[in-house]
Length: 103
Image (cartoon, rainbow, N blue to C red):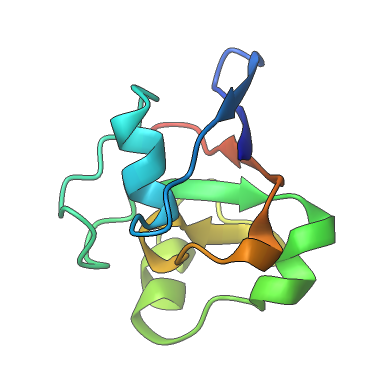
């Protein structure tokens, strides 16, 4: 399960299947995530803020993901991640994210 706060401040609980990235789970559950590149880490349209209890487990963004995030106006070094780069894991059950503002 994923806890998602949308851009209107509403919270949703969504299913997350083992074969999905977080971006796919958001998209497949009709959350307003553009995901223009389809999960190839080349657009930052699946930008989310990960709540502090899971960001430590995931670690901070690196490489191409970090470069894309740094170009966004809403970048928060301590919480920003691209949902397409977060793979399903049992240890992430209940992860809480907030959709970043659209740019």
